[in-house]
Amino acid sequence: MGKFRKIRQNHIAIFALLLLIPIICGFIFSFSLSNGNITRAERKRDFLPKLNFSMAVDGEQLQKEFSPNSNAAVFGQKNSLTPPQAYEKLIKLDFSRKSALNYIYPGLGDFILDELKKREVLGCASKVIFNPSSKEVFTYVEGKDEKTFDYDKIFDDTAKQLGANEINLQIDCVFKKAETIEHLKSITVKRASFSTRYSSSSTNRKHNIFLAAQKISGIMINPGEVFSFNETVGPRTAERGFRLAPIIIYGKFEEGIGGGVCQVSTTLYNCALLAGLEAVSFSRHSLPVGYVEPSFDAMVSSKTDLKIKNTSKYPIYIKMTADGEKLSVTIYGEKAPTIRRRSVTTEVIPFETVTENDPNLKKGEVKVLFKGKNGLKSKGYLDYIVDGKVVKSILIRTDVYLPQPARIAIGTMEDEINLDTAPKQ
Image (cartoon, rainbow, N blue to C red; front, side, top):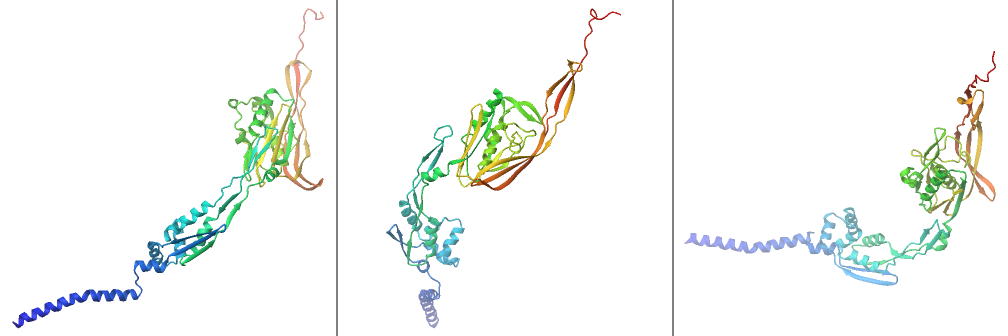
């Protein structure tokens, strides 16, 4: 009987202990909370309070309340970050600024963007229309002013204040005024013009000059951009419409496809110099040419190119005409300084005389096949003019042009003897 009573007492003790376990655990859990282990809700509330967001735009006050994202609170506290630091961390994790705000306060980034987009005024740029073949070379279309906002700055300014109960922003508009017609006219004036003559050229050479000029006229070169003659005109081939005409090859004039195109490149080169542009690539001919002074020619071929860089702040425009007698180039853009070209021959290289026998000429008879031309050494200068006076001179190149030897034929044909009329011994 005593043994049974003892077993019963043990059962009662175990049952009482089971009843006390929840109470003890609750006490321990409460104690742990008081020592810093907070719940997810408390973590969210302490790290990010509810936000009363307000922004003033054009005198209008826009307000909205936002609740924080508990996941953002966990993210911030887990990484020991303040709310602004959490925003920056999200940016580094390839969140956009808007998405980072939305993650911390759902809808905040969208609210800012949507409300500001409603108040934007989209503008359009004023336009210059280049019509090189028309009497009115330029026409203009006036644009519309634009009003927008610096969204990145607004998002960042908002993020800097995260963690506060209230955020008040003063939003500044960003205005972009369209260029006026007056301004467009001031940056499309004539910078320079240059002409060369070719009235005595063959029909084929005139055709090649016209074809190349036509491909260049109407070109616009943006600031910093480099124009390539070869890329613009393209290969000089019969398939592309070019014809046989004299060209200079290794110091001699010979027939070749595209003869005359070098006069186009030379005329453009000189106009570009007068317009104050930079010739970044050019080559001389091996012989002097008759349509421009020494040290101011610009030969082009499949291996050599004329390249011109627009060093001005605004686009430049090229107009080119070829009427069969005169090849003219005009370059338009902002006003350029007054520049003059100056060619100086520093040395004359005498030509030699070459003789050759000609069996078709009577013995002792002499015929001049080519008179010969002297070669020369030369320098090219650009003189900058202010109030009619040279204020600066720049040596731009030094060249050597080969002489062309004179060619003389000497007859070697013997006189025939007529036996009927010959004196008898």
